[in-house]
Structure formats: C-alpha cells, structure tokens
Image 1 (cartoon, rainbow, N blue to C red):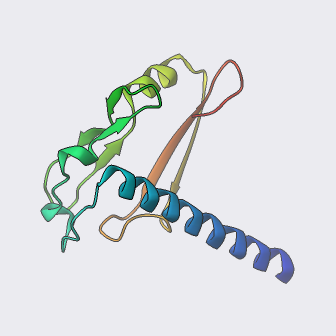
Image 2: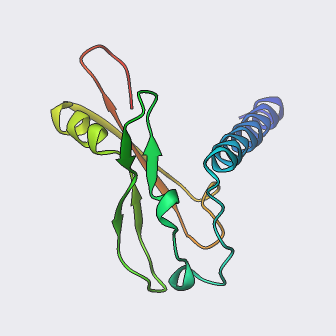
Length: 122
C-alpha cells in the first residue's frame, strides 16, 4: 500500500471512530443514560434505563440481551429481540471484531450483521 492510501485509510478510520463516538454520546444525552466510570468491568453496574431502547414507534426493547455477570472477564451482548428473529431467518451473516473502538474496560467489540432478502443489512 502506498503512503497516500495509508494516510487516507488512517484518516477514514479516525473519522469513523469520531463519528460513532459522537452518535453514541448524543443518544446517551437524549436518554439520560450516563454510565459511571468504574475501575474495572466487575464494578460496572448498568442502570436499567441504559438496558432498553425506544423504537421510532414507541415500543421498548431490551438491548442488553446477555451479561456474563459482574466479573473481571465480563462479556456483554447488546442487540434487539426483533433483530434476533432477523438473524435467524437470514442465510448470510457477516461478522467483524475490532479492538480500536472497544471501551476502555473491554478488550474487543464484535459485531454481527445479516443480509435480508431485500438486500438490507442489520
């Protein structure tokens, strides 16, 4: 990869990281979901208002669908029940893990996408 392409890729990665952080910050401000800043994942207590998502139609869905418990090597699984149905019915899944975007207390963020019949991804 030549130097220009490398610089453009680094800029794009930095831009996407900043953009996603701003989106999360805005959503937290709207929902009044401010998490404490614990020393480790074992001490992280997630308030109930941060475990739910209000859809455009006003339905409330739980988004914290898995938690290995308050331990040092903790795993949190976020998603929506409606998306689990979508995953089950999809024939194509895409998965990717990143270390750059993970919160300070965690090692990795792992994302699963699925392709629908209409060609959209979730």
